[in-house]
Length: 402
Image 1 (cartoon, rainbow, N blue to C red):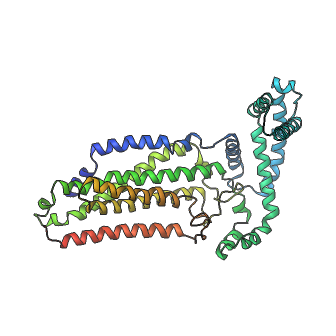
Image 2: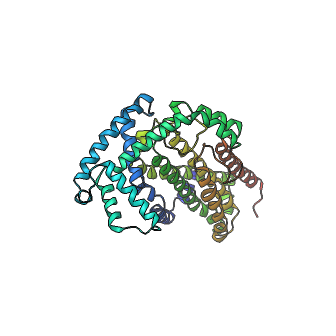
Image 3: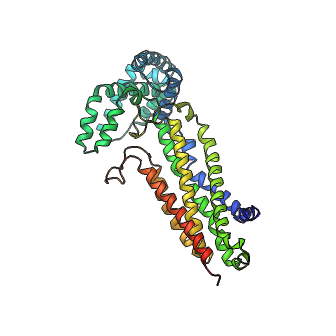
């Protein structure tokens, strides 16, 4: 245990931690912070999130047919509110815009005239339109109408779902799964699109940082021993000949701790945006995003994403210490660490967390991915990294010290 602690101390060096902290702050500011500041990007997304929050608290995770009927009454109330709000806008009153109907007619005429003039907009009229948008509940009304249209269209066109997928040449398993998801419990989930989109992009940035931080933390460890010629001293005892096994165990343990810390730090601002109020909602639903292979709730999905990130991080740790063992200098390790980060983090990690466990292709025009492909890829990656580490330890125990 004492040897294990010493190896941990060699990994967690203050200089490396300080550099990682600085780089981590810069990385967060450049990439994932955007999806926190603009968790709901735009007034349309904000309105959808607001309505979904109210509906999930009132109706539960799905919108049933009898609950859909209540939206007509809510729309009527919002229209009355709009009429009161637009009447309080002097510019609108001066233009004769007194209610929702007259504003819609004015807006349609304005956009028609703008299109006819080749996109040359009247700035005064454009300012008036934006003033009404910002000074009323316009976006709430638009999202209620959009939700009602999507709900009714799905009910009407549900019978065409399977023939359409068959005509597209989708595999039989995908067609059967799509048929299962046509039931109201799956089709009418209230998980809003902005939450799905921010979860995907934030998760992709998080997995890239987890892999990068692990590569930075573990790369110098074994290289430093080679440069300082400590192997001869380590091999002077029977216990010292198995030092590589202890070093790799310490590296994997450090990767586990670092990944958990990263997950916790990134989870705090993300959960502060309120996505967990939709934890019981299914992944498919009224607002399209993807067709999931599994009947997971959003809460379960977040746990699965965390598990994927943890597994990828451990795989990256295994590959890093394996490459570090066969690097004679920091430059040599850097030349190996850079492509490792790009392959496992920037490319593979981002690809795996791009709507995982949903219907998608291997690439844009490639074949469709079978069910559970992401799990198979991660298992193979982790298995290969562990196998390489195990074979390296076994080989080192049988080598003669030169």
